[in-house]
Length: 550
Image 1: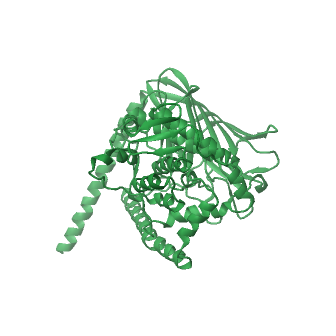
Image 2 (image 1 turned 45 degrees about the vertical axis):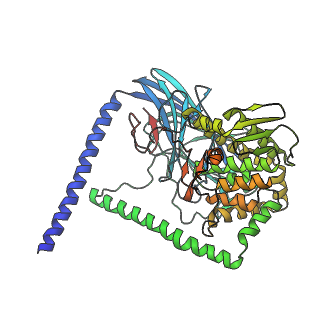
Image 3 (image 1 turned 180 degrees about the horizontal axis):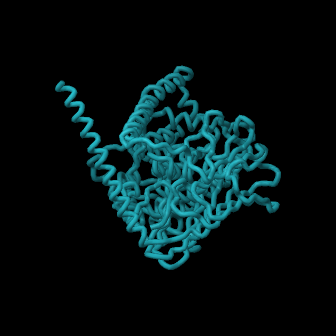
């Protein structure tokens, strides 16, 4: 009897807690509605241009015209939705450019709302990333634009169709869009439109043009195309995936359930996901690794040797990394490109500075790599400043630290590295090496070898850090591919107390990759503001489910 009373009390307590959250939600909704009543805007148009690459990437250009009619605004934002269904899922997003009213916007890494800035917010815990444009505006129309790459979004289904399926406007986007237009660079008679019903559809001889008026969210488009338009596509099955929702419908039928039931379901789902991740990582990942090792105990050495023999640049380690962490890509790209240039004797790493030689160094037989080497050298010289005597240029580690530890220098560095990575990846098919590997069938092996190291090397405890790599380069003027690949699982190291080594540790800690891929920008942390998920910087966060303006 006593136990029953305790159970009843516990259930009552849960009900009170649930009721408290409901009341808080109602109050927040009421306050938000009052606030939004003092702000009005309309979305006049949204235009999307789509170009495909041979390997299934899509280059998307979005152009939005938004008119602010009442109140003052400082942000327009929208989500990029990445569902889990295999046919619709894409690997990564790469921002190529962003502008406001035709003026290039500066990338930032917070929601501080500085005019003519933009922030691409990655949300690893959800299926949406968010693009924020910042500009103070009232009683005017503002033009927002962004160009980005969706990696591996076009896939082949079981019917041997090349499928592009993408949600251009999120389900929870709050405003109707007066005019929507989608331009797809695709030949006539090579496609079938099977999503986006109700659209006006025509082909002008060069592009497929889809248009509609007064569009309500969500806005989805699916196009089935001839596979002959592409060279290599990933094949997936659609048999077990959900149907693409109509743009005028919802993703699922709405059913009335109790708040208590929803809370329980969410709790079980979150717990189940966490459990699955832990089991997959600790059991199946380790088991798969052991299987590969039993099949070939030298699999990591062999993979590294094949990559080195093929002449694959170190930069490809970053470019083909599937890690969602933008920080890890920058970490790998920055240090590995420096090591690449050290091998060519173009850069010498001394204990207190970088020495950039202006002649007498080895070039690259690959024209694209040579071009990207030049761009990288000019970037670090322009970003960190240098002095020189004509024969060589010098960048001191102290000047590098001084630049990167300021908010502006920090953001400029990260933006520049992101652009370098994006340009390299966009131009990769122009590479002589890429074309040779594709033609002789070796490119797939390169991808497999890089994937092996990225996915399984941590199980083999193949760890390394920048300091160890730098010391190897200083002693030998070179670094093996095996050593470079071990930076996939870079770890932090304890700084030695010897004052003579302080400068070299400044360089090795400019950006630091910690265990399990967590990323720290620099040793002196800079306050860049709160993320949108906390909503501490947003004057009116309407949730992160679609977009809007505030």
